[in-house]
Amino acid sequence: MTPAWLLLLFLASFDKFPAAEKFSGKPAAPVIRTRFQRLYRTMIRDAAAKGPNFAGHFTIAQWGCGAGCVSIAIVDEKTGHVWDGPFKALSMKATDSQEPLEFRLDSRLLIAHGCPEEKNCADYYYEWTGTGFKLLRTTGRE
Image (cartoon, rainbow, N blue to C red; front, side):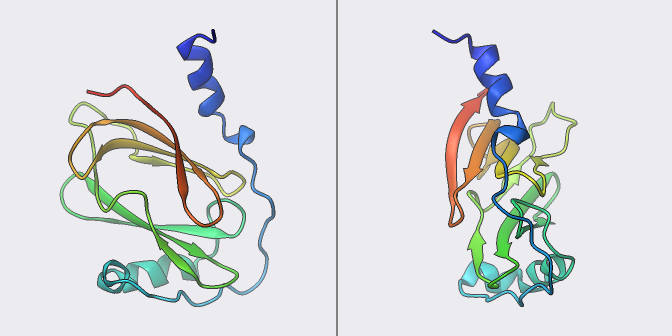
């Protein structure tokens, strides 16, 4: 059996989840489809205009949703397709001073530190599949 700390070290390694390709070119305009996306269309469009910051050719658009809270959407810079994040709102843990989200342009791994919908505070490890997030593991649940 693999020790929990070793498994966590593996999951937290961005290079274990490499992006398939890197985008170069003019970003496509985001295609806003859902009510949630319409509410935050300016934040989504502004973030997408800066170019990809996640998984090769995607942009994670993030914005504050109150004191100590963040929301996100994911934009495919090639097609403009927009997906909602794995949570509507991620509240930060009261004792946590780190950034609520960790991600990189060259990786499909997203690490969220906080409380989705203000419940179940923990560290969440997600893999981007190209069309959505797959929860890999949750650690440090309060």
